Length: 227
Image (cartoon, rainbow, N blue to C red; front, side):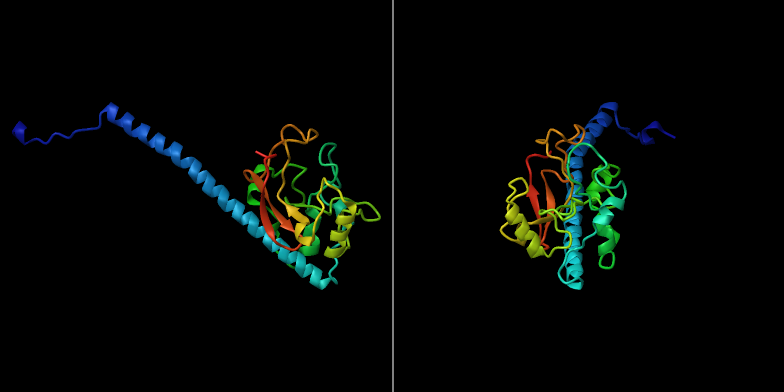
């Protein structure tokens, strides 16, 4: 066969391969953060949906129980880990493991778990209890009689009036039930020195947290005290 009839196949040179690899690396560096942000945005949306469903379940419970909130202080002591199994912040125990039992007839277990928290603090004792990793504020003490800033067995209006009467600037003085925080995804403000160093400044969602209020509305609060 004549040499001129042979077709010569040209391969990539080493320089061309290095250029292609460099371009792929640059694209990956640009796109990976975008993908991560999109993934976290989806988790944040799921968390918002969970809290909205939790609010709906809460009011279904109220409708079936003469508008009174559950008084399950017994579950605060018998749930996984008991009451406040730590010596550092917080001085109360806002974990919500107890809530699964009274709300069981109204919602599935999936709504009690923020997908971001599940991966970040799945085994952190100050966060997760009985598979629940939302904090349920205003149900964080086990005193008898019920603490003024706790809602065990009270109506939403009673709790709101008690919080107004308590006038505690640390937890806020509400104007109505729409200002009373019921549930929130966990966060550890960097401004509280008693928080363990490994947790200080950490939050589930970047820049803030989702909050469920006593009137069942959900809002994202930006908080500079968290990373």
